[in-house]
Amino acid sequence: MKIKDIQLALNNQYAEREEVIEGLMVAMIARQHALLIGPPGTGKSALVSDLTKRITGANYFQWLLTRFSTPEELFGPVSLKDLEQGVYKRNTTGKLPEAHTSFLDEIFKANSAILNALLTLINERVFYNNGAPAQVPLMSLIGSSNEYPEEGEGLEALFDRFLLRYEVDYIGEDQSFISMLKGSAPSTADMSIDELFELQFFSDTVTIPDEVFDALSKIRRELMDEGIRPSDRRFKQVLAVIRAKAVLAGRDYAELEDLMILKHSLWEKPEQRDKVAKIVRNHAQDAVKTRVEEIKDEAADILNILEQSNNSTDMAVESTKKLKSLVNELKKLQKDNPNRPEVEQAIALVQKSLKDIASQVLGV
Image (cartoon, rainbow, N blue to C red; front, side, top):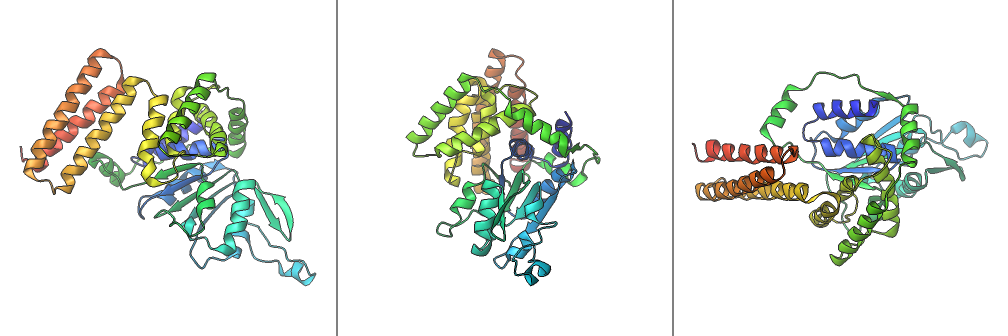
């Protein structure tokens, strides 16, 4: 599929952004919206721009919002010609109401003059021009922000409109950082907007088996037990994401593994992300894959604690013991479950961390 070629090209170009890239593509197939949150300089706008330029024939609108942004910037200026006739109508040419895809940077800077029209356009795909509702062609709006909106700013409804939400951080792995500096060979992978329309149509026909619905029900119950309560509407909406995930994988039916993307959808507050991810993972992966992901998380926590200690020798020794224990557990998993590439990758990842500690901290 052409969309897989685009995914591969972007994965090669943007290091450590595989999940974000997958999410943006799923959002486009599902006709949903996505939010990227992270510090400046993490390549959010470059990634979105690169992706959308590969959809030929699509209208794309990009804008940086400030506290002083005006409706004219997003929706177009008032037509003077119509105004002379007593008609208050905006000229929307080249603006958000005529876009198929859009990227709004610093979206939580949107002020009250913009917010109501923006919410209606995002949610209902309707723009009121001179009081008359007009359907807009918007498929996906990608928002970004350097920070989460503060409570009490009246942005809860806007935040809720984004079905997929990703935190984007600076590159972590040294090799990934070097790959970013070197860059990758340019790729011409693209697809037409009509081909994207076909994928969207196909997505609507994807079959969701009962085991997936059962898993969703269990996820909902366990989230409620943790005090996390996504709305019924949100659970209904994520069905489109599940179907789109299956399409991206080249299937006409959903599998339990497609539920993994919901770890980016079912949380409302940042502190809920880890709990949501764990609950979703327990129902979307088999036991081996779940334990591998847990071990990778444990290894990341060990490295974070070591870094916070300013790489003290005592902590490095303790971290080494813990990481070696994780490697041993992974090797046992590998022995009991041969031909599992995710186990091999996890072993390589943790062993690399051990080598880094030995050379950079302990001087071995």
